[in-house]
Length: 52
Image: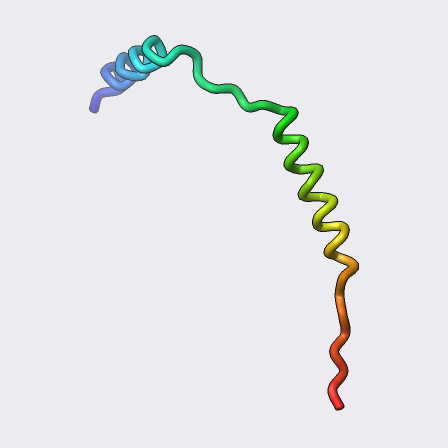
């Protein structure tokens, strides 16, 4: 496929569906906050198994 026809096809898709979706920063920060707390809580949960 030629670059000109690919660019034309991409512009047609963008016109049909509107602007591309943007990343919601608030949701992303919520996910990372939950992940950090989960990792902090579970990092101190190590147990040492003794061999007899």
